Image (cartoon, rainbow, N blue to C red; front, side, top):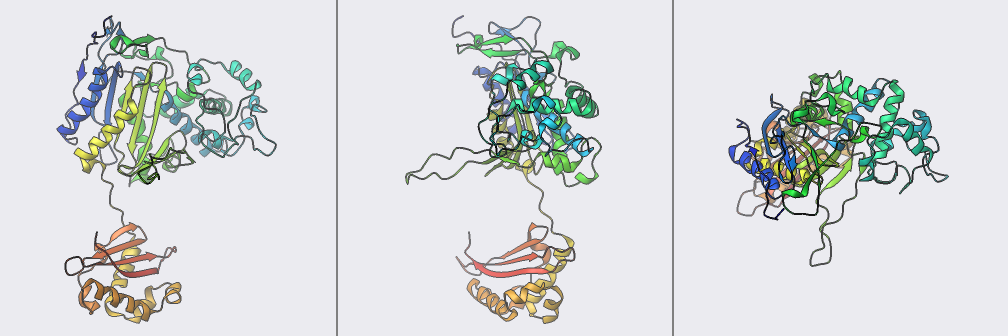
Length: 526
């Protein structure tokens, strides 16, 4: 087939939305369409996931490419990718396995700090341990801290392994790369072991537990471990990559059968169903999380899944002219079946990717708002991760309100104390300080010294020497809430280049809190 051969590129333009601006939809659609046009994937379906403030689970859909290619063309009987396409989500499955473990923990049926062999007897003696090493625990495996050898791509080919075959594998022993609980090393085998824990604890199997606990109650009818129970006409065929550069490089690969290793990567799903799952997990961080559904898995346990438990070391950025690296582009780590990252531009992001023979996938959401992206592609090494992250940044650029975190709210007690603190700064009345200063305040800095520091700061900012007049306009509600217990006011100085007056207040840790810190400083303008 000549290199000029191209696959048809049917695409579904982004569905109109009152929330996502047309420019953002057009740019995101173009991203995915260009990936297909450039033969980076045979097909992809994507969705923008609604956040905490949205009633809709999906704000917009889009798709490009084909469910199956044959010699670079749409295969007979196949169809273009669309929002209803069912694809493999691969290692995104790990979040379902982790959630099931936590549900069993919450029910008192297991403990995360128990060794794996306490639940899977054949795991006894399977780990290669030094004399001073602990046996890996459920927590170690959940967080990729068991010290097991990274097993991509070997693990991807073990999905159909039976329990008996897995027991024989364990009997032969597992290698290691570091001591348990001393570092991050991604392990599919670790999650296969966790699936076996679910089997043994419940007397059932992990597939049934995940289906009964989460898939059915959440209405995820297009999500399953076996394709046989799904609408075969909507299942995307996976494609491996041949050594060509046009659409003929995509060669169909057969599906595997579910087995022990399915606990790490076995699920099929759609973008709509994944959006439902993301919203279920993300709801734990919604402002009204306590009033939302708790029966399937508590908000507390879902938040626990999304905390950075195991730091994943990232390579430093290239060194500059001075020979020093400027640092790192992000902080990255693993929670329970989820990746937790902090980016300078996006803030805190929760995600998991999936790579399987013939498939690539990614789900990602912005923790403060719950807004996210899901992309499911049907070729090996499909760029689902970079495309989704680019899409999230397009949303940030074109629709900044979508990713704008809700402002932190100060506690009522903090606002009450703030009013009193401002009164004291204006008047110096001892009765106010007596009522609201914690016992450390006068021991740390005398009241007279605090007044002198305020006068010095006022003079430096050009705001005058009369604190009552200078601070007359300030109110407790005008402060920026750093946390429920910490406030900051910034009052611009008078004159070009004049420093600003900054006032910082911090409450003590008691419920009936008092002011433990009140500082006034002149700070250079930014």
